[in-house]
Amino acid sequence: MPRRESQTVLDVVTHIQRRLDPTLAYRFACRVGMCGSCAMTVNGTPRWTCRTHVDKVAKDGVLRLGPLANMPVVRDLVADMREFFDKWARAKGQFTPTRTRADGFARVEPATRERREADAGIECIGCGVCYAACDVVKWNRDYLGPAALNRAWTLVNDVRDGGQAARLRAVSGDAGCHSCHTMMSCTEHCPKELSPTRSIAGLKRATFAGVFDAEGE
Ligand code: SF4
Ligand code: SF4
Ligand code: FES
Image (tube, rainbow, N blue to C red; front, top):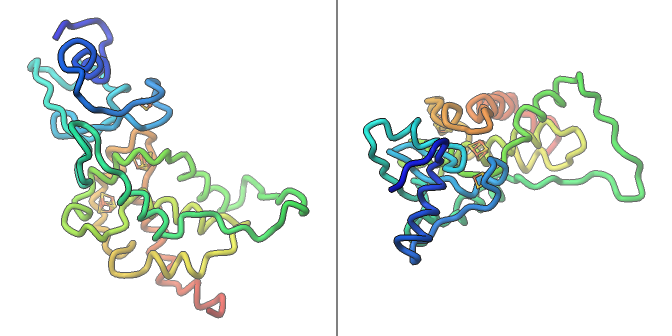
C-alpha cells in the first residue's frame, strides 16, 4: 500500500477497491466525520475510518480491517445494521408529538435540567460504533444497546414528547437499561464523545422511580 501524509484508513480501503480489488464492498458517504457510515473494525477497535489516520493505528505497519462487530455481515466490510435500527424502534426512539402544526413553537428554556439532559445525547448520528464496542450486546443479542438507549433518554427529557410511559416501559424490560454493566466501552469509543453510559444511568433512575406509574398508566 503506498503511504501518504495524513492518509486515513478510509483512503486505504478506497485505494484497495479502486486499484486492487473492485469487488471489495464497503460504505462511506461524507468522508469528513458527519455521516458515520464508514465505521469499521480497525485492528480490533470500532472506528470511523475517515477520521482515523493510518499513522495512529498501524504503528507496526499492519492494518487488520473488518466490518463492525455485533452485527450480521452483508459482505466484506459492510455490516447489516437492520437489527441495530430495529432496536431504536423497540426502545421507542421516535418523537411522539403532543402538538399539531397549527400550534406555535414550544419554548424549552436552555437552562432547564431536562433541556441540558436532552442536548447531551442529541448529537448521536447512529454510526453503530458504541454498539459494536459493547460486550453486553455480544453476550445478549436482544440487549437494546447503548445507541438506542441513549436515544430513549434524549426523548425522555424532551418536554414536548408525549410517549414517556410506553418508552420507559420499553427500556425497562430484560433486554433494556438494567442489563447494562456500566463497562463504559460505548462511551470510550463514541467518536462524538457522547456518553451512552450516562444516559443509561438516567434511564435506570427513571425506571426505578416509576415515572410511568406517576403518569397513571
Ligand atoms: S456501559 Fe453499558 S451500554 Fe455501554 S458498553 Fe458498557 S454495557 Fe454496553
Ligand atoms: S452514541 Fe456515538 S458511537 Fe453510538 S451510534 Fe451515536 S454517535 Fe455513534
Ligand atoms: S464517511 Fe462519513 S463519517 Fe466517515
